[in-house]
Amino acid sequence: LRTGTASSHGKTILIGEHAVVYGVPALVLPVLDVRVTATATPVALDAGSRLESTVHTGPLDTAPAAVLPTVTAVTATLRHLGAPEQHLHVVVDSAVPTARGMGSSAAVAAAVTAAVADVFGRTLDVEEHHELVQECERVAHGRPSGLDARGVVADVPVWFEDGVVEPVPLGAVFTFVVADTGVPGHTRQAVAAVRAEHDRDPQAVDAVIAAIGDLARRARGTLVDGDAQALGATMDAAHELLTALDVSSADLDRLVDAARRADALGAKLTGGGRGGCVLALAADGEHADRVAAALRAAGATETWTTTIGARA
Ligand code: MEV
Image (cartoon, rainbow, N blue to C red; front, side, top):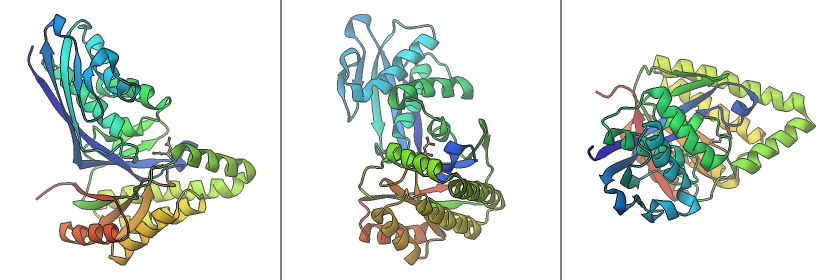
């Protein structure tokens, strides 16, 4: 046995939030530059397992509810590997903000499960890794769709449709800026509000949902073609449709406007809405700096720049 290490990253939804609940496709974007690292060191049986993280530092068996998904990552992986009695000292260092739609719980789970496997010299294959992360996500969220679990281990965007998960190859480098409104997202209420409106006026809501599905298909083509301009246009259009579903907010709209005034190629809310983050597309790294500055001037509490695609 040895000290195991692994890392993972955040994710955000490129196109398809809310509509995905009704079965239309969605694109998930890995945020490769916002990372989680985990190490797991085997310790003697009488030492007991410990966790060290910003949320909790102390024995694993008396950890508070907030870190139960992380405890699950350790215990489920040990059980999976046939070593339930092994004690570990687990250290988690996460730059993925919590409750911002960036998949922090899944990212931590992905890093911890892989680090525990690495203790035994094991590399989890994609499906067993996904299953273990989903087990943690069920502890964190009840009934996770699996979007987060796929996004935090992918290195290209992931296409989701009817349970089919496909990596999307990229025809260029894309540079995104994620900006936090500083207001926690209200995914559950937003999903319920869309459902209530759908019950009231199914035809109108179905039309918006179908239009978001069309945007997801178009966006997928722009990623493959490396057409950032066209991708930005689909993001702008998606924000208008999400506004029609009433899941935006004044804070989100203000940040989207600020990004567009800084000549972002496109901008939209990302995730559940009514708080949380916006996602903007920049032309390159230098432009991303300007977009990020404009977003902070408009009130964003934090911004992250991330690139994806073949790097020169
Ligand atoms: C939230 O990140 C994404 C939603 O589509 C809800 C879901 O897919 O479960 C709003």
